[in-house]
Image 1: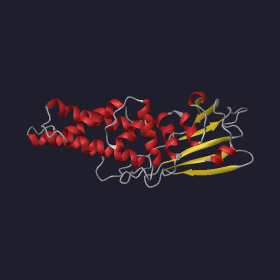
Image 2: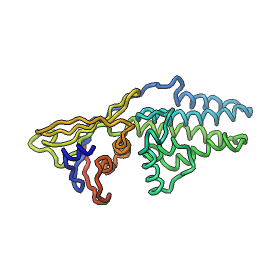
Image 3: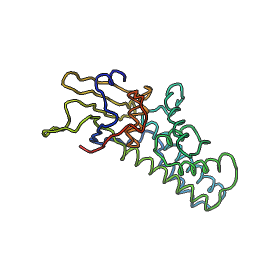
Image 4: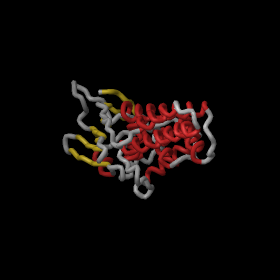
Length: 261
């Protein structure tokens, strides 16, 4: 990434982001998907015995867990082996988020990542934790209102996270120091960022385009810069890119304008 900075000098106090197409894919990457567990939970609400009540909460929890793994896999991470040695920058964004936000810290690592990436609101994460604790630690029979809340929460969690990742994430854009003129789509020099989504292999392709040189860089989830490209795409906060390009100035000096192509 230092090479990109050398080839194209971004004016961090006044640059442009030109959004292009938004790509996504929806595939049943698991044999049992989050909405299947949610359907089971809704069906179990018809069982009035204790085992039915427990089954509702258990399947609501499974729906949330399955959706969390699905989102992480969709974004390129190995949800089965999500350790900090493999993805060291993940802990950095979690720590940054914890410092900046009044958030729930006593939650599972995977939910911390979802929270720090802006995929799920803090309040929803907090309520998710209550569902997990009710089943795993309190060993109490869920009340009727808790059963309904568990189903509603799982439904909300699935729909909210899917909408952000599949429908709202900006996967293709250009970084520019000026707006193109004379009828051109892009200026003479710019950086093209494209997120290549594939369950088997997801990565960012970062192309520096100029009259003198075109260079392609592949940024994989194991790359320390990946998380910043990812968070920029998810949150639409393109000041995150400064970290990917090793900009050392203060965040308040980063200024940009966003527009669609």
